[in-house]
Length: 131
Image (tube, rainbow, N blue to C red; front, side, top):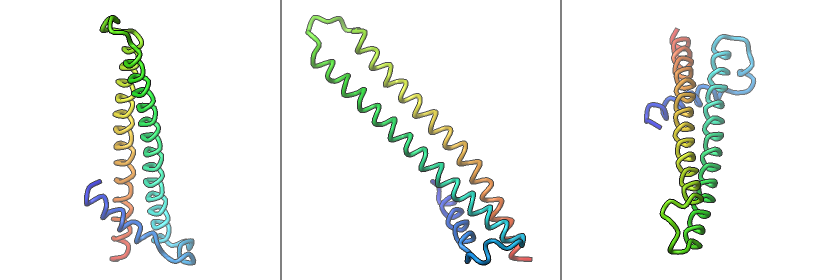
């Protein structure tokens, strides 16, 4: 995460942390603050969800690696180089890496959209406070 993104999220969290009695009034600044709070929460939940998925992929990768290592220990010396079961495990590892890359790209895309929305809301809030 870049410095700008961190500072944007800190600013948004500061704006969203208003006292509860002011939070639900019907003024435009309060509405914008609620939208900011929701967007910050969505970004945090998105990161948490993707962290869980990355850990799941890592766990699966560890299982496949373990199976592959155990398979190599059991192979007799005269087995051909392209052992079908070994190739299947290697292919699964490539699929896991591909899935990890796709997951990273989706996270970046979704996060970018939410950060754009957050920047727009913070700017709107700043303009309202100045006027």
